[in-house]
Image (cartoon, rainbow, N blue to C red; front, top):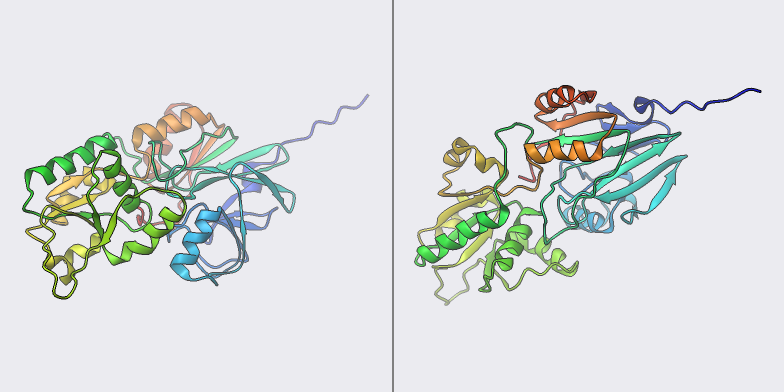
Length: 344
C-alpha cells in the first residue's frame, strides 16, 4: 500500500516581497502595491497603501468609496467589493478579508493555498474604536505584521484619558481656540467620535480638507455630532474662542490658522510620545492617539495569532524581528519601501 502525503506549499511560493509590493505568484495579484499593477488587493484607504492606476482593485466597500473620494470614480480600470469574512477564490488561491481595526473599511487579507495560510495585516490597532470594526486575530502559518511603533518606548496611553486632557484644557482656557491636528482619514473622525463619547455636544469646527471624508463616515453610519466649517462668513464676527477646531497638521502653518483666538496647538498622533517631535512642531498640547498597535499590542497580537513564522514590514522591523527570535518564532524583515506615516 502506498501512502501519498501532500506537502504544504512553501510560504515564499504563495507570497513574496517584490519592488512593487507583496506579490502572490499563483494568484497573480499584489497586496497594497506601491506602483500601478494589473490586479491589486487593497487593505485600506490611506494613500501609502491605496494608490490609483491599477487595472483592477479588490477592497472592502468602504475602502473603494474612500479611494473614489480621494482619486475620483475612475481610479482603477475595474473594482470589486470584498465583504468582510467572506471567502473568494482567485486563480486557485483562497482570499478572505478580515477586520483590521485601523480606519473605516480597513482589512487584513488572508491568502491560502495547498494547506498554507498567510495573513497580511496591513496597518492595524487593538483599541476599541467607535469609527471602525475592531481587529480580529486570524490563525495562520505566517503573519505579516506592520511595525510602525515596534520599539518598547512606544506604549500608548488610554485613548479616553488623552481626550479628557483635551477637554480639561478647553474648560481651563475658554478664551482660547483648541486646534487639533489630525490626519484627514481615520484620525480626524476618531478624535471627533471620542470627543462626542466623552459628552462634548457643542459644534466641532473642521477644516475644509476634512469635510468630504467626514461626510463619508457619517453616510456609513458613524455619528460625529454637529460639525461646522471653520470659516468666517462675511459680516459675521466669530473668533472661535472656546471652540475645538480639527484640521490637518499642515494647516498649523497656514494663513488659515491666524483667524483663531490665541490658539492652543494640539496634535493627535502616536509620535507625540516623542517629546522632540512635539517640540519641533510647536505643539502645546500633545495627544498620544494612534491608529497603529503599540509595542505591547504588537507582541500580544503575535502571541494571540500564534503563527509558525512572522514577516515584518514598514516600520521598526529589526526590533520586532529580534523579539520574535527571542520567543522562538522564526521571523524576517521584508524591507518594503514606499509605506510612509500618513496615518499618523
